[in-house]
Amino acid sequence: MLLDDDQCYRALKTHDARFDGRFFVGVGTTGIYCRPVCTARTPHRENCRFFPSAAAAEGQGFRPCLRCRPELSPNDGAWRRGDAVVARALKLIEQGVLDEEPLAALAERVDIGERQLRRLFVERLGVPPIGVQGTRRLLFAKQLLTETAMPVTEVAMAAGFGSLRRFNAAFLEAYRMAPRDLRKQRVEVPGDTLTLRLGYRPPHDFAAMLDFLRGRALPGVEVVDATSYSRVIGPVEAPGWLRVSQWPDSPRRDRGQSTAEHALKLELHGASPTRMLEIVSRLRRMFDLDADPRAIADALSVDARLRPLLKQRPGLRVPSGWDGFEIAVRAIIGQQVSVAAARTLAARIAQRFGRPLVLPGADGLANLFPEPQALADADLAGIGLTQARAQALRTVARAVLDGAVDFRRDSSLDEFVARWTELPGIGPWTAQYIALRALGHPDAFPVEDLVLQRALPGDGSRLSARALQVQSEAWRPWRAYSVILLWREAAQQAVPSARRAA
Image: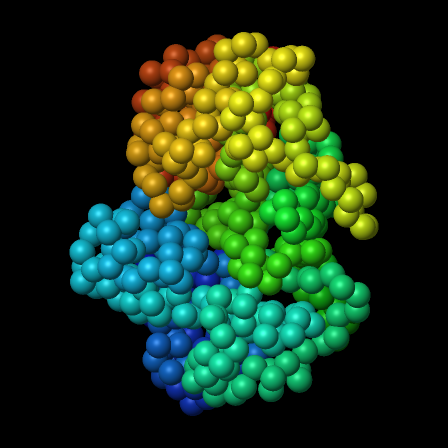
C-alpha cells in the first residue's frame, strides 16, 4: 500500500474523496468493507482493517457495503498505469485474458514467471490475479443488479460468468446472499435505457474533456453537445449507441443542500449483455476515470511552467478514444494539417466507408466508423488526401488485420512505438499520438509536435525536439497530461500551427 494505516484512518474520518479507490476499510464488528467516502458512522480505529484493493478485502471474508457501494469506486491508478508488470497484467485481466486462458498464459504475456506474478499481486494488491478477476466480475454484477432491470441471467452473462448456476454460487459464497435478494432493493428504472454510474476520483474537468472531443467529433459517428458525449458502437451485426454525461448531484435531506456525485452517467442503448463489461472498461479509459489527479499534479508541479496550468485545470484528464483503429486513421490524417481539416477528412472517410445505421432516438448518429477491412484496399481518391497519406491508411489497415500492429494496452510504450514506426508513413509523432489517444498511455509524449515546442516556452520562441525531450524527462511517468495541458492552453490562445493533434 502507498498509505499507512494512520493515513487511511484520517482519510476515512474526513470521507476524503481523493482517496477513493486507493484503499478499502474492513470493519471487524460487521464483516463489511467500505470505501473511504462512506457516509456511515466511522468505526473505531481498533475495529478497522485497511486493504489495498476490494479483492483483498473480499479475500479476507468481508462483504461490500450496500451504502457506499465499492463497485462504484475508481480503480487505483497507481497499480494500473505505466509499463510495470502489475500494471500490464491488470490491463490484460480487464481485457478478459483470464476468462479464456490460465494464469500461466497471463504470466507469459507480461514476461514473468507464474509464481513471481502471483507474489507481486499479493504484495501490491493483497490477493492473487484470479482474486482480482473474480472480485471485478462480482462487483460489476452487483452494480447491474442494483442499477438496472436486466434479468439475472443477462447479468451473469454481462459479468463474464459462463452459467447462471456458477454466478449464483459465486455470488452467494462471496456476499452471503443470492442475487435475487439484492435485486429486491433495486429502484425501478423506467424505459429500456440501461443507465450506470461510472465513478471517478475528483476533481474531473468534464467540461474540458467535452471541449476536446467536440472539436474532433465526426458527424454521424459522434455528437458532443454542451453537457454530453454520444456515439454509435458496434459490432456491425448488433449496433447500438451510448451517451455519457455528468451524474447529477444527489439532494440532501437536510437544509435543501446537495451532495456531489463523483461519477459520470452512462446511458446505453442496444448493447449485448456480453459486451457490457468491455464497454464500461473502454469508457473508463476514454474518459480517464481511474486517474489520480493528486499524484499527477504533485509530479508535474515541479515545473514552474506547468504549475499555473495545473491550478487553472486541476481535474484535466487525458481524452482517449473509443476505438484504436479509428484513432490511428485520424492520427495519419492529422499529419501536417489542422484539427479542423483533419476532422473534415476523417468525416468523409466515415461517411463513404462506414456502415449506415438507423438507431431510434439517436439524433445525429447515422453510421459506424469503418473497420480495417473496409480501408485495406479502399479507393481513397476524392477524399482530399495526398497519395502518401492514402497509402499509409491502407498500409495500417492491412497491418492491423495481419496482426503486425495492435492496440494492446499491456504493451510497453517503447514496444508500441517501435512496432508502429516500422510501418511506412508512421513516424514517432504519429506513434506517440496513437499511444496517447488510443491506449491512454500516461507517458506518451509526441516530442516532434510543433504546438508543444512553441507552447512550452510561453514567450513566443520554439524549443527543439531535443530540448523538449530533455525538459520533459522530469515529468515522467505523466507526460501525457502535460501534453493535454499545453495543447489546451495553445487552443485557448489560438496559437497557429502546421501540426496540431487530430
